[in-house]
Structures are given as C-alpha cells and as structure tokens.
Image (tube, helix red, strand yellow):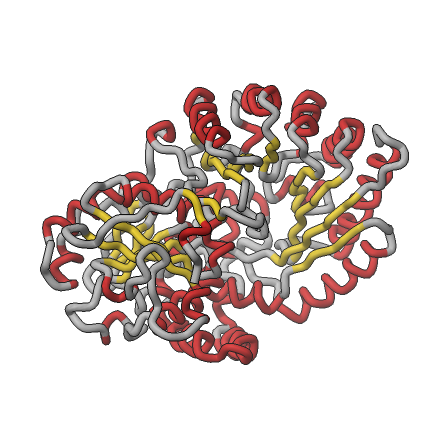
Amino acid sequence: MVAIGAETGAVGKEWGGRHAVALGYPNVYDVGMENLGFQAVYTLLNDFPDVVAERFFLSAAAAGGTLTTCESVRPVAAARVILFSVSFEQDYVNLVRLLRAAGLAPHAAKRAGTDPPVVVGGIAPTLNPLPLAPFVDAVLVGEAEVQMTPLVEGLRAADGRPRADILAAWDEVPGIWRPATDRGRIVRRAAVADLDGFTPQTVIRRAGDGKSPFAAGHLVEVNRGCPHGCRFCAAGYVYLPFRNRSLPVLTAALEAATMAGAAHVGLIGSALGDHPDLLELCRWLADRGVRFSPASLRADRLTPELLELLCRGGAKTVTIAPEAGSEVLRFRICKKLTDEQILVAAERAAAAGIYGLKLYFLVGLPGETPAARAAIVSLTAAIRKVMLAARRERTRSVRLVVSINPLVPKPHTPLQWAAFAGAPALQAMLRELVRDLQKIGGVQVECESPLDAAWQTLLSRGDERLAPDLLAAAAADARRRAVFRTAVDRHRGILERLPTDAPLPWDFIRPATAPAVLEHRYRQAFPAAALPS
C-alpha cells in the first residue's frame, strides 16, 4: 500500500455526501502514476465538489486482504462506481485480478444489483472493447474530457439507486457502450475539439528518496493525434484529428509545475515535432534552466537548433522510430523517412553533444523480406558510424539502444486485416537480428517476446470468447505464460489475415477514419496481402 504522506498532490476528501469513485489502474503503482490519462481522469473527477475519486493499483491486490483505495484505505467495492483506465491490452488480466481482489464476481452478469458499476476507458478498450465485455458494465469509447461531466450528472440523477439505474442514467455520456443493453448500437468515439480547455499533466508526485521514476518529474501532454498516418499506428488513428495545445497554455502549466518543485519535464505527444511552437517551448524551458526531454521525435524534425535546445535541457538521449530498416518498406507503411534523413538526424545529435540514440523497429510487417530485416542491421551500423565521426567530444562513447517489436495488427488502422507473423517465425527473426546487431558493438538490443505479442494480438482483435482465457490467466500467476500459449493455439484464426470483404468484430465502434479509407490504404500499401482470404 502506498503511503499518501509520501506523495504530494493527492486529493483528500470525506466520502460523506459525495459520490465516491474508485479509480483503478490495472498495473503496479509506479506504472500507473506515470500514465497521463490516469492522472487526468483523477483530476477531472476531483474537480467536482460532490465527487471523491481515490486510486487503487495492482500492487495493493498483490498484498492480499481486502482491496482498498490509496487515499482513505476504504474498500474499493464500497465506492459508488469502479472506473478503470486501461492503456494496454496486456493489463486486461490484471483488471480481472483486481475485480476478484475487490471481492466482486469477475463476470458482470453474476454481480449483485447493489454492487457498483464497473466502467473501463482508455485507448485499448476504445479500439476494441469486446474481450472485456463479459467483465464490465460500461465502456467509455474515446476521450475522457467530454465524458466525465455527463458521467457525474448521471451519478447524481441515480443517487442511492441500484447499478441498473445508474447505467440507465448514463444515456447522455458520449461514446458509452454498455454490453448488456447496447448490442447492435453504433458507438461514436468521443473527442474533445479544443485541447486548451484542459491540460493532462502530472498532478501527484512521490516525495522522499527519489527512488520512484516520477519522483521529481512532470509530464505534460503537448499535442494529441498525428498527421502522418503510419499504417500500423493505433494512436495515430484513434486520436485524430491532430490537435495542438497553444504555447501560452503549455507555458502556464509548466510555470506552475516548476514553481511546485518539478525538476524535470517530460513532453508527451504522438507528433511533438509537428507542434508549430515546439522550438519556442523548448527555448522557454531551457532559458529557465529546467531540465526536459521529449518523447519520440521524427528524424526529419531534429534540426540543429532543436538539438541544441535539447542539449541545454539536459537530454542525454533522443528517440526516433524508423520502424523499418528498408526505405522501401518504410514508405509502404507511410513512415516517410529516407535513410539519409535518419543518418543526418543521428549525425546532428552527436554534433550537438547528445550521444545516446534509441531506435524503434517493427518486424513481421506484410511484405517484409529477409533483406528488409537485414537493413535494420546495416542502418544501425551506419548510424553508429556517423555518430562516432560527428561527436562533439571525441572521447565520448556512442550509446545505441535498438528496440525491436513484432507487429501487433490493431483495430481501426489500415493493418487491422494483416496477419500476425507467428511466434516461431518471429523468434527466429529476432534471434538472427540480435546476433547480427551485437556484432556491431556498442549496441543494446531490446525485444518484445513473440508470445507476448501474439497474446496482445488476440486481445486486440478478439471478442468475448477470450473470457475463459483471461480468467485462467488471472488465476495462473507463475503459470500465466502457459495459459497464453494455450490461448494462442486455440484462437489461431484471430492471428491470421482477415478478409477485407467480411465484417470485423469491432465495426460497431465508429472511428475517426472511415473503414473504406482504411481498406484503401491497406490495399494501396500491400496489394497482394490485402486480397480477401
């Protein structure tokens, strides 16, 4: 259990006379508290005087006993509503574990009418809520900023009434989907038009010894969505249209954060380099002596001026995502970066005094060949060579981290129809890549497990038939990976290429991009792979 005295920024309210919301993140405390969406919902709810939102995490469930909230150590099941923020499909297992730890039946249909409604939101269920449908009473599809006010209004209208009445009172919540009553209904994703009305940022920090990764840091969302349309990217599609926060709003938020003691600022966004005032924002931070670092940046946005500002801000590493080693394959997935642009970015980083570079690549893409995978190795070697030659300080070493991840085809992207490459094939690919990358020297390689990626694909593209597998995984503990293997074998069809002329399970969710447009982009990029099975 987290001691609230070790935190700054947590909200303490009496439950009496207020609508209590138990806000859960289905992972451990440190992971949950670095999630901006989770902290944003905490702020949005606690801004209502008649609402008290208190957090709970997987770490509390692991300790045994009654699952309680962090703030007042009350039973989670005593809240009026249990609301989960879920960013990753892999955490669905933990959500089931937390329901059990709270003393609730995992299946919604088996819970009592007096039990609190279980609601889930976040990007993972927004893409495809079906695997969670048996366990939850409602799903919030889309962005929380426009959902919390009608959610609270429904709570007020159904004050003191049972679960079914609360659910019925949420008819006006944008993007809500209630599995028990809304089958067959088209659900339109909720989206906020103007980001300046609310700024997701760190509101709670861990005080004390600094062992927590966010102890003195402050995360702030700079923009949302992405204008580039990479064919594999769920965030780039689900968060359309691309929107930026204005510079005055961002600097006001960061002024308050630094005055409150934030020692490091993390700039978050799917397309930071496309913010029209990114240079001005970085200069504002650097001129005030604030340490800061960005999330991933496009290689073609790493100008000498931006890199100098990042260096002034204390950045030791920058992250770029070529995604494919082959320039041809890169352009097919709409990651429109040339080899020259990537090498120029690496050279500029070293010349500016930034000697660490993290590179993200995908394997298992449609149309990928052994030569395309070998290009990951040759591109990495070329990057290291140009960085060594361009070093501002000749005695400094160059640090490359290469992260290689199997493609997980995501709903509502052009690659939603693509096949998962298969764990055995991916294992062989990764083994060869790791061997060849390590021959370069000075390269650290990180790889996602192909089994974990296969399990994630099942949860991304599956439906209610995965409920027994989620229950088994939640109960398995040390044997969980054996459950994953069994599930991957049992639901092999979910991993195969999906026909473009048949309905998809998640078609009832209306995304920002029309399905016909997604299909056109899929066929345009991979005409052979896009043929119906």
